[in-house]
Image 1 (cartoon, rainbow, N blue to C red):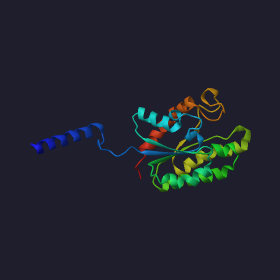
Image 2: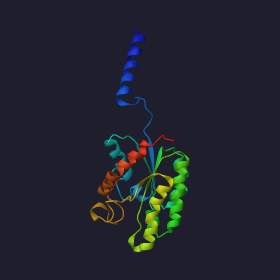
Image 3: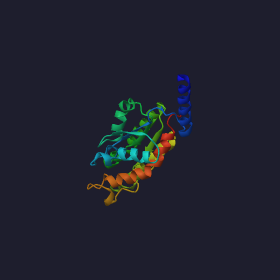
Image 4: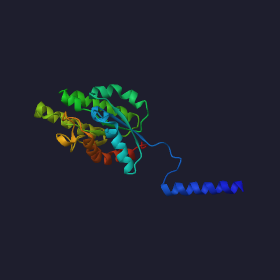
Length: 214
């Protein structure tokens, strides 16, 4: 009798597994490391309005369960992100999203240094077998056309070099719109973050599909 019940339970579990396409005892959801600056950290926002929280919720609503690890530090440059990447990767994420460069541009830092830092970050992540999503940034217009062209082009160049997923401008659809930004005109408000997430979530879903691939 006990054997029969045990077999019956086994059949039920197998049928559930076939129905949902994965075992009900599946491992924890993938962890995506969001390495960034204040835009990732959620500067000036209540936690529910922050980028990583809204992104995680949007993915779940679309049927993609994942943990978005907030590794954003306000004021951080690409050099800062590079310096702390090793300890961030020590937490063993399954993929990396890079949102850095805004502060490099605001400070007028040499684009070649920004490119070298981001190049090293991507290379380190890929060396650990992690899929990468790189998000781009644009230089402030007051720094001139020459600086802007050099700075703006480095992100796409790195994405091509490393063959990683690429979202050209993190603040697409939000930058310079007063209704979607905080009083400083630089950091998005909750609605602005929601717009960023709406546009970015589909490519993050693509990133998640790459988890586990070699």
